[in-house]
Length: 243
Ligand code: 6PG
Image (cartoon, rainbow, N blue to C red):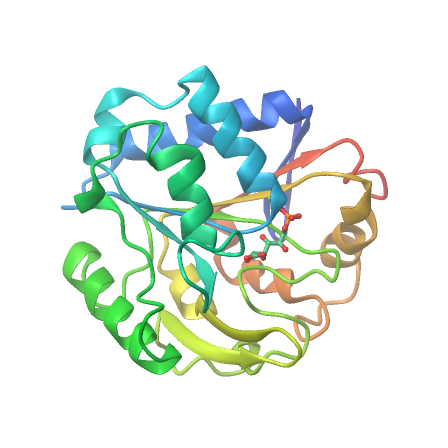
């Protein structure tokens, strides 16, 4: 693996397996040094996390003390039932939390059976009682889309200009429906952010984020420059091809 520092966080380039191991190690190390009353770990959506869940469940990559004590959630969510294969938490639950035996009392999905605004408010309250008011997660996994979006901030998202300083929000994304998401303020209140970005389809977007002009409205993942001291990018050779 190679490593360098960038304006957007530490950039680690390696093979998929090396990156999967590194993602688990980073979270387990964060758990070991955490002084929070509840250790909160958010997964995210997309295909990469689903591969990582399968890998983590199969290799038993997460130690028992983490599985028993950490509280699990997702950084963002579609407003769909947990049973849907579009549900980020539902996928985490099916592919990792249940197979690994995480107690259901430590599962914290967004309340998608209420309206998006109510779900966001309920989630803010849940997270405030777990982690403290205004706090983000101890560990937040993110991905990046080929349009350079991360979490649920897509190009042009109003959250990139004004998130009202709330750590979590509901918003309707044109053409994609309602999303529930951590906000830029929430990311700044996280302990560690791990962005897994794999595959040739990400090379152009990663180039724009890391090497292009600073314009988060066009390249939303650039918002991570505001918390770069806590961000680690895990990128494979194909995604790093244009860096
Ligand atoms: C989602 C995520 C989204 C995702 C990226 C990367 O719910 O889809 O919030 O930001 O992380 O689109 O997805 P891939 O892992 O499929 O590349």
